[in-house]
Image: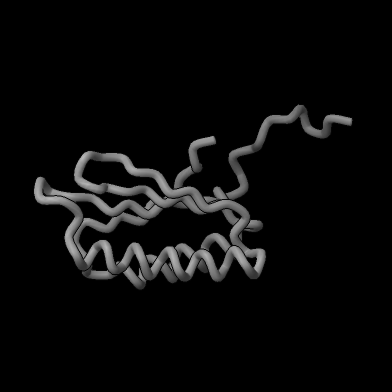
Length: 104
């Protein structure tokens, strides 16, 4: 049985977000890479605990720019992990944390 027509209502917050490590013409800076590595390790742990349901890693540029996209089991986990990663990246140049859907 198809409940609710199969369309997602816009009321539930997205249970996914991305972390971008960007560059400004000289490759991804060391500090941004370190934050990304720390975030990856943290998210892998969360995946082992079942909080993270999907983790994708994608090169998006020629200089090592990377997008890590995370899907989570529920909205609470999502906002909790999102805040944690945001804290990690505070004050670090060229790291972006953004709530958005992962590419399917």
